[in-house]
Image (cartoon, rainbow, N blue to C red; front, side, top):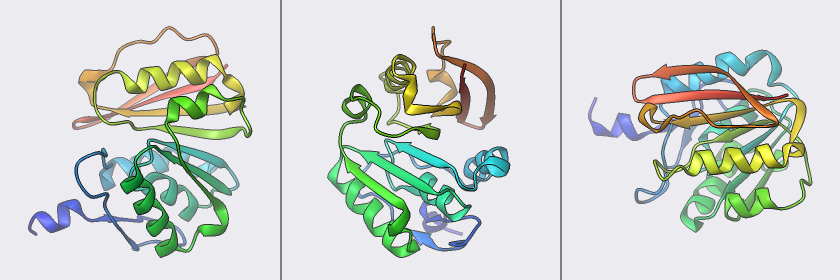
Length: 190
């Protein structure tokens, strides 16, 4: 088991189980480990089928593709970087989920500043590390809560050192799960 196995991405479960995914060239994304992805989708499992999922700062698209593989109805992938967008499109093609995806090359803040054109059951926020990008994205959703359905969740993936309590109006933190150097923070629309 050399470095190769550490950096390979794959779909863990569902209709595209075992399918390998491409990585984004360079170092502009924050990949999720299989362990964290497995834990996340164990939490979401019951409510995932038929859901609508927003993968912000989507990187490789690995999280949104896992959601599709496990029964999500539609995923919108958002990333501003062309290499990431190209990788997402290729990974969607590899997993044959083209019919259930939207891929937008746009800055996440710019998209969230628009009037919501769709409501999501889940909003996944896994930006590049530090600079409080996660907090700014969360605050934009809090300011425009109609991006989410009434009982929708926003899920933030950060390094535990990045965490701080955020003063929110329409969202409320309800859980945290720590896996090594990854922290998942769960917020619900209230």
